[in-house]
Length: 83
Image 1 (cartoon, rainbow, N blue to C red):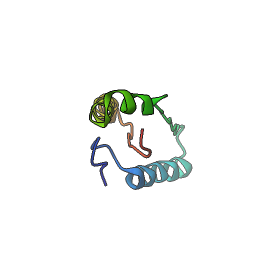
Image 2 (image 1 turned 90 degrees about the vertical axis):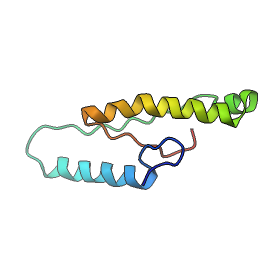
Image 3 (image 1 turned 135 degrees about the vertical axis):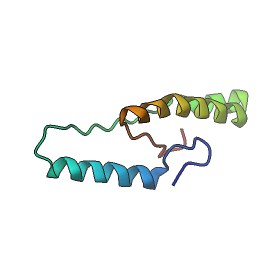
Image 4 (image 1 turned 120 degrees about the horizontal axis):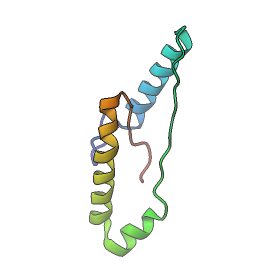
């Protein structure tokens, strides 16, 4: 249920959580919002090509750590694509 590199929720776990939140939102009478943000890293292939996959992986891990801090605020953070 975790992405092996970033330790964020993997694609399936992330999708299950979003589905659950959207269902809860639809069933709720209170005014909560569900927002999904997709973050892509432009030209990430260039990082891997120029500096190697090890450096590219380190960049993704650091980005995941920073985004993962949002979980403490109730955000659901996951990795669903390669970059």
